[in-house]
Image (cartoon, rainbow, N blue to C red; front, side, top):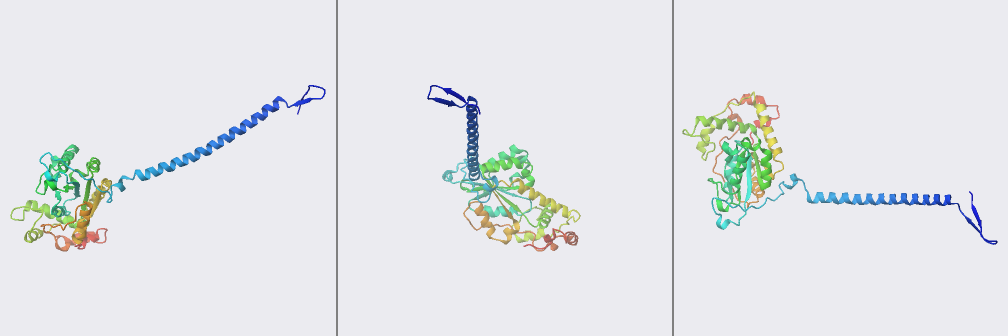
Length: 342
């Protein structure tokens, strides 16, 4: 490498490195410093990013639980303090009220179940209010009807008015529940309404009850009067004498359609606070009514009903074409419906 030699005096000699080498060395040092700086910054950013992700994840888990889990059986319904327009709650104005709806299908025991609930001193269940077409003609009509019920401005023989602790009604799946399910779910969740689904496991028994009730609407077997529910053993025996003919050709298809309807309803209303109750369980297990009252956050009481069951005993004694029905269902997924279940 070339060097520059300067003679300053007789005894002094200074040797300087070339300028080109000095510049090259500076460039190498600068590049090393930049590379090392970029490396350090990258490591720091990765650590910061990792910490940020952990924190966000923790916040989401703690503060934003899923809607389904949040509105399950463990969810405590809100306390409401309605201010009705039609009357004054007087001394009960500070008593909270909880909202509920019984969602069911015809001839599934909903009438009997509702009389049980209404025997509770604190419950007002106002019947099948959407059986009237105008009340369910569109979403606006449905919402207006619901507002009247939950504002305590709906009057029926079951209304306990001022001091109700729980107010609701029963709603059949063919009364707008399925057609307007999105808007209804939004309303139920916004008003914090608890839903009690009531169905029958044995859909064949339900079919027998449907056919017999449909026949009596025209036959009027009780002294020219049609009754869907009775309160004496004599009336029940009179109605049970009629044995309907079940269409065995369409039987499996009809049973499957009934199953699909229930499954869709449970899917549509999965995000509501709800419980599913089966008629057979209510008949066979007295503790089931206590579970319902606990779900509704009510003081548990012994519930009673004056209604008398109409169709009792094995189905072979209730269906006129029993042999055809037995042959159709035997060996299928619905064979268990043929056996007595209570």
